[in-house]
Length: 444
Ligand SMILES: [Zn+2]
Image (tube, rainbow, N blue to C red):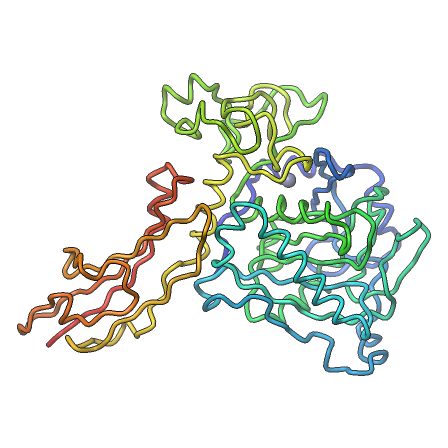
């Protein structure tokens, strides 16, 4: 399924305004390819600190020639091989995450699969990913590198020849891992569907990055990079995916940025309104104000968000969208993530063709995503011509006759609807998003 909405022009414009002078150095003298020569990227210089944004080359000076992988590997077919790590439903009804390894030789591909599994397990240990893991398919794509490890690890002058060219010290920042985006795409395209990409660089050193807003050029919104054997790097992926899925703003600010120069942003977790104004207008995260938050403290309107210091607010003092010293999304962030999950995925998949007319004795069946336990609380109901057939509540397979479809000559509509009754959603619009249905026409 395709993720529909992108980071706003505001964020894009800002990314351009914070280009560091050093950013061009890493790509100097390297021919550029692909759609954009430079792209915005976010990184976390301190494993427990706030993020930063800069602009980096879209390609890498450390990418091995494509032929090298084929020549060097004992099992040539391995390069580009796809291993499903989690296949929970049809790609049209799921968010598809593609994980690609870099700096793994042919002999290390089993290590990559193990690392990919571990990283995904760590991401889905964080709510709301945890409660909604059943809405994700996860594909691991093997990329065979000539060298083991990646450029810049352990030291700045360490050079490696790898399939995706990932490297520390991107833009002169040690913890910023950049990657060749075009090469990444050739591997991502091997997966059956890709909504988000995670690149795992074979390294124990802390680092990573997040590219977002790539959809126009690459077909998927975001690429997160992270090091394989450093558990702090997992939080980078959890944070970056939240930009693409939940359309969340960064909740940190830069010293000296001053007053927010924009009108009310579309972000669900940043607002020019104070708590009082929000409550009066019943907008943004008004329904969560005053609630104890999983990130600590209570939900309010704290000044400083979306990179600016004044005139813009975030919902909580801290959260994973502000700093990586916590793995907790705040309540408005969770709700926005759940909205994003359901924008791109369906919890209900019809198992009987809805385009063919069924009879009263055609068994109608639906598949439900395996959600919870946790935040999610799916509720399945069946309706005949809009009226609920209460006896079928919770059943994934029914006979229209048993639902009470009459044996007359008319066409009747049988509908199965699942709605997520989770208390993590308060907005009626988001609740509507969590409702997925299938409808059949039934005739005698
Ligand atoms: Zn961010």
